[in-house]
Length: 180
Image 1 (cartoon, one colour):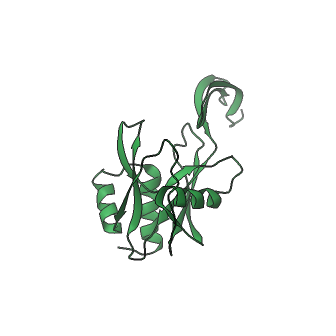
Image 2 (cartoon, one colour):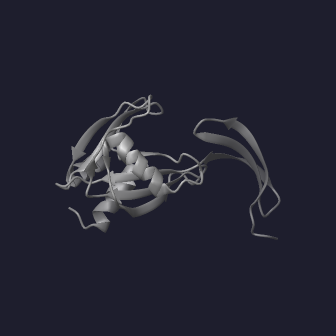
Image 3 (cartoon, helix red, strand yellow):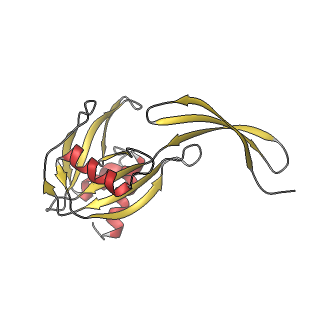
């Protein structure tokens, strides 16, 4: 008996602007089959913009899935599946915050929900920010907030910040750079 789980069929159930949803049929080592949902996402990038005083520039924006505003690090989806994460992160930094950076530092790569989605997010740190101009998409309405790392960690542990990429990125930044 093989120990392999094999996908024997994949059917597109929904094609969207950001995701595609599939129903997969998988076969287990004992011969039984099951239907599993799979969500394909082309990927994204995010950035932690660090101001000269050490505060982190955050974006507050409405999230339809939660029907509320969230506080997050700037991020966005890749323009195409082959776009480099650093290019996307640089673009999103300037579009959402009005700052750019000559050198983005890789921080971590994360997968948001491995049980049913392949979304991959590359996260970068941006220091030595250069003022530029915001270029928001027509459906983006963003308020910027500068927060200390201590304030952000407090918001994470109080449950005020729940966005997985933001939580992982802020805590990874704190550990990597030995901050607070």
